[in-house]
Image (cartoon, rainbow, N blue to C red; front, side, top):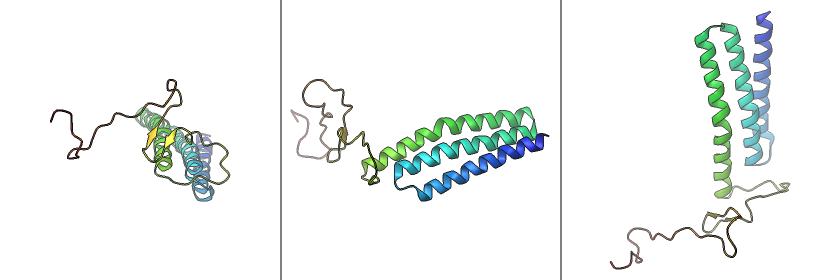
Length: 142
């Protein structure tokens, strides 16, 4: 009976990972591809690790499987967010069918400054101006 349950988890996990890979190939832009790979890939890997824990039924293997699942569930969305955000900042184009661009009004591509939209009245806060080493504008008094 345990073989049937293990087979179900392995096939379900492999199917979700296949779905993630198809999503990476078929979806039109970076954010949607990252969404497909993160959600389906993380869940597929987790299901396969559950199958491994059930197949061996040993404390050490189960502990490692749970640790791997925890690591993947915690790091996969963060990594996808960072990659997607970096892609946006370097100018990777969005799909033409994108309805909402939440960063468009708050991001200045010339200065790479991102405002939160919750700044006080008036102009958004500007980053501190620190001249590059060796430039003509040095600290005052030197």
